[in-house]
Length: 82
Length: 264
Image 1 (tube, rainbow over the protein chains, first blue to last red):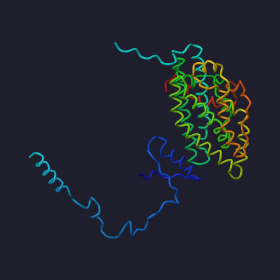
Image 2 (cartoon, each protein chain N blue to C red; image 1 turned 90 degrees about the vertical axis):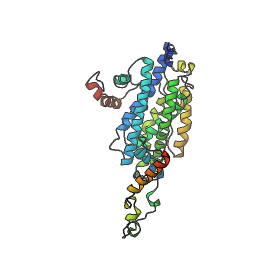
Image 3 (tube, helix red, strand yellow; image 1 turned 180 degrees about the vertical axis):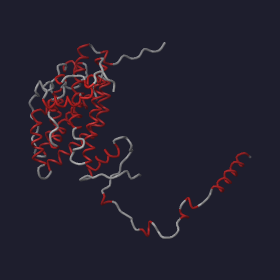
Image 4 (cartoon, rainbow over the protein chains, first blue to last red; image 1 turned 30 degrees about the horizontal axis):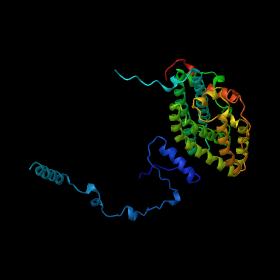
């Protein structure tokens, strides 16, 4: 599910039509989900989204696994050859 | 030896029937072409940005349908689709008189669209069962786009009818202008008998008009709006041309007539 964008419409029925025109008329969509703005639950608390501590260990970039990966590949390769 | 290619279905028809088929295709193609051009006049000035995109996109769909129909016609008459679309004088167009009127205000557009889309839906349903397979195939494809058009204009009709302020009076005025020409989409064709005999048309235009009335009348009555009359359409309904249309013709032929025979 990807956020494609917004439309202005007086109600759900026209919102569907406009969503179809804006995000589907060039055959770029397989399915559209249209949700009224006030039906969207929002989470915007910075303490929850951008906590003050170092979070680099939660990102894949926080680990350098290149060498481990190479070693694992070599092991797998040698097994396959055996 | 390579197998012989199957001849195009139209060559198996006798000359008068082929002529009748050409007349039918031209009528429907011109309808889609002319409504497409009128509605493209809304691009940039529709009531709101979203509707601007929607109306313009629907107008483009109609031009696309016209193109497919002109190409089908060009096969039948051994002509060129672009020449048919842009190379005729004002009086040679065969669209319904309902489409003679200029774009008008938004309510007029909605009123006309409502009447036209239902007529188009009824005839496409019939064409889908045509013995002329290319027409049946094209109609089936067109219906997949037209069902959305129908939803869109039905929705707008209801909104304006129930709308506040000047919405309803304007819709009533728009309808009043459309109604005298509303049934012109089913105006008689010279070759109708031949089309029915060959199964190209599975039902008479009068029967189709009846089906159209059965659909639009309850929808309009429910909203307290006047419905089209049941009188037979003006036999000249596809030949009468207007000053409005002459102006539009000047617009849509402007580029093609600037350099005759140019490839573009």
